[in-house]
Length: 251
Image (cartoon, one colour):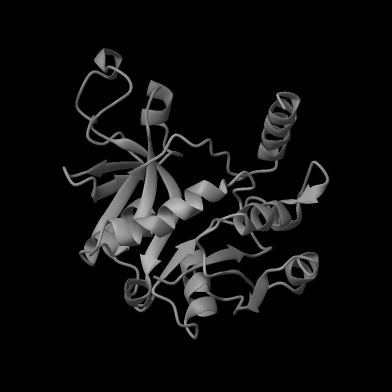
């Protein structure tokens, strides 16, 4: 099976303008994402989908294809599709451009999912919820699954624990996972998703993956113990640098 990785990256983020070019211990964030992604062994190719000549120039020394896309595309998923739609591929991994610590084994695991679980339309990841703060945080998305470990629903709320005494819960929880926003799509489903207008479920929670649920997608959720530390706001840069200092200090 041929699977490409695509990293959507744009400069005009409302909470953190110029985020892809932000320096993290001497390298731009987008450079770190690309370098880690290039270490994955199972991708047929890696593409950065951007609307910025600055990002393209930043990556000119790296062995990665950069595809220029329309600045007015409504989402990162649409940017992924715009970059890959003329390339022959069976599936696509959407690698978030604000995950500078992305591990190549995670990407390979997503690639393998399409052969390990025939018939899936999408694959994503989740982690056990070990603290009450994560369950009730509106900033962390939760996912509940069926017995085949396929997504039933995603929410910012404490599903399915909205009517129980949270202080009596035992962690790690078994009823839901913390969602990790990495996705793989079959090419045919990615095309269907991007050709479908936003739906009410999606708009109500502001979660694009609920459009896939609405369309009846079979979404495999892979449990992972890998460490993730995405960059949403400028303050997160220091958290990543602190982790890098700690990691290198142990080696």
